[in-house]
Image (cartoon, rainbow, N blue to C red):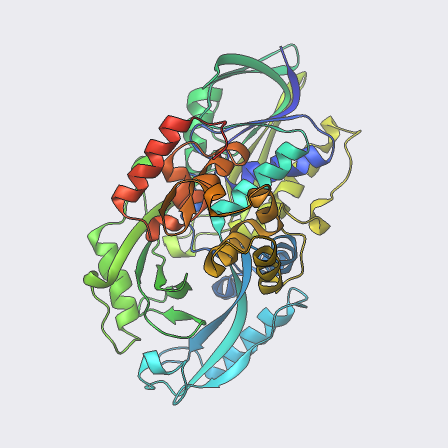
Length: 500
């Protein structure tokens, strides 16, 4: 029976981030995920790495400062999937005075030691491209910096790096029972290779919105921190404006809604904050949320956005720590790490809350809390280490894509650019040995080929068409239902370990 230093339950951004950090410190790690990596809350975000401008209103200075610092740490670590993004904040009637907003943005610019991203500028919205979608009815606005991120790829990259450093990553593997004996956790799992039992010196529960259910139902313990499930829903529409800036729009209820360029032809709009009581696995946007998001953008944009403009919707449940806030929008986005220790028994660390931007710091803090159990472990290291594929300069996408095209001239320019955006320097691994178009294998549509599908199955734990087209890529936005079915048929026929 294998004894691990850590068993981690949950393959979202927090679980995979801890697995990566722990493996790099020399700890032996087993991570189990009942579904696919990043298939829970981590894939349903607003796709942002940001400080959280609105959290300043709640005086959450520590959280904002940590997030702002992490924003540039992640930009350096993963420039292929984390990209600078400018936001337009229109100054509309009913908002705080312009001078006060500018002061808040000055604080936002400087609280986290910004170095890579440009600072805030004042905009004249009575002319030019940024005022055009607003009909130039707003005179003044501000442009400030944050970053966009491919959220599910961020999860996978942490898992890849963890595995390269020795972690055992098991997808579609459920943790069926845990108990304590002989000063160790006895952990039973069940997955594609059958039922197994492992032992661990520490157990980490990173089960997202299922954390309460897991602790009470599997660990058979009481949850020691209050959990608040909040649903966040988004709509993706046809492209609403031509420029590459995003908008942060204040709604009449005091909430903010983002309108973000999403790929070349769509706009991502979100999010809502709705109390949720159901099963996180079946969460879906409802009509009232669609109406809310459409009303929010139509309150600002002059060209009406209707349901006919929507090309996709998605919703997820965020497991927030319940700090007693009266409204879901005011509940803290900070994380709480709860360690349970008792004499002679191994520790259990349970994660509540958190956000994508601060996942790396969460992992560091988690391992600091468990440091007494692992005195020989190495120290923190992830702040200066690139994620897989990220060892190239910020802003170096075009040069890397040009290099890829020079080595493989039969690629389409758009395909090479997409490879770099998704895989960075690992694009060379994907293309290794290819000498012509025939080596790309089956062509499914939207430049997805059999070679890429098989490579993702071999190297990124992809097992279904959904894994491929919605989490390893976002090509589901461009593929038809028939083409997605063809991807699944290919996977079923090829199996999980073959070349294209």
